[in-house]
Image (cartoon, rainbow, N blue to C red; front, side):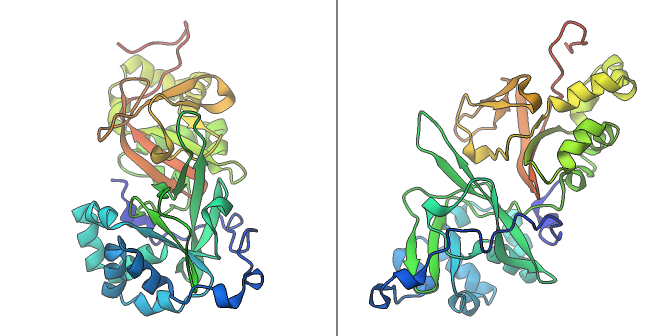
Length: 331
């Protein structure tokens, strides 16, 4: 099963996008020292309220003094409600593996001070979490919507628009609506090489155009990956065509990829249209409140927001076939 816990200790191979010095770091020389906050991040979070879960987790993992002594950082604090909503299985797992719990909490801390208006879309920021002194990166996305306010996400978790930009003596605090559990895998192909998505993995390996897109570090992508059961629902004829007909297989696979950015589910609104590769068509998102998300009306997203070093993968329950006269359509 694709699970977040496996990814915590996968060393990112794509570090070029890390931006510990990416513009927009606050210039303390422009601030009168007498006007600077005197409370550190721990004290400020405690005064603000709503950070009990995060502060308790820091105490449990012996990280309170570590955070207190950091300098020039931005901390994305999951709200108390976010910690209460954390899956019980994940909570128990991390409490049994304190070293991994520490890295998960450090993953919410970015090197450098960034106010919300200075966070940049599709930029991967170096975090305090690392393996062998190699920092993990966390992706920020800004989704622009005409009918509602823009949505900013940190590794897929929504940055609360009403609780951000709190200044402390050693950094800045933003609140998140979720605990970030989606630590990036090394690559999309590594993520797909899993028992539940192995058929998609094998088909992509046979298809240079798809493999190039998913291995590229130049452009960020989103992949909608059917699980093995989805391929099992296809007719024998269609499965045979996927294995034998190169052009048909390519068109099917490219139906599942957009190379126009990382589309985390929290950035979508109901009815949004996501363009697939080469703008040949759109995938329409149905996003009812507190229910599964669907694509094109009846394709369920089973496991959303599996983050990779150069994009995001959503596991779906149906193969998206091309809609043309010569293609075989499933009943």
